[in-house]
Length: 274
Image 1 (cartoon, rainbow, N blue to C red):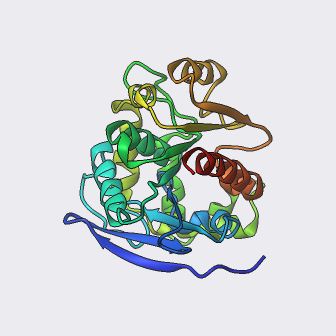
Image 2: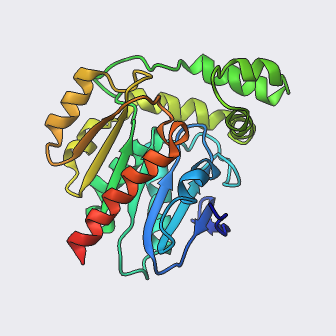
Image 3: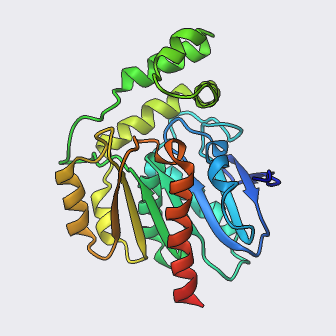
């Protein structure tokens, strides 16, 4: 597999600078990747390498992460949605609206954005979104103190202890996780995590009118079976898939199969809008 050329762009939103990692022709089929709470834009590299050459792939360092601006206490859903609005605005000359592919926290942001600005997206892929929120499950499979402890281990160079936090993960993925924790602000983790419980997700998901693909991991308990069925009832037009044999980090656990899910979804949209 040949290595694609990746270009870095710093996008000034007026409040923050967002680092975008792009690949492909700017007038190509646009797909925007939104990572989770501790992940970087580059975490989607294995997926982007496998995307068709005529796709314009944009992966975002969410605010407080990677080369994007770290801010104080501005990590609410409205902040992330505003950032995605700036990203989409930067691509507006493309006659094709983007598909948003969001993982975990990024999936919640994608749903909120698409529900708020339905004319600006062609579809979304929601990858194992936390289904917490007001009136919903009040625990998350990874406690906040685990995120904070893993960041402490990375920040203090305790590599063996950090590695022990991720049994079964390859050396390459452990190194990526360490790099990610070194490049995410503590405030971004804490406030974003709290937002899982204080900010809604389900109402946005129910409000979606664009084509939607939900990918729920078999393992990890991010979306329990009854919660999966609830999402199906809330948005019966969405295609809902329980992805076998993978945990929460679906796109890292199996980038080949994940890329196939995404490209099949996008190509179906290409056929609809041709």
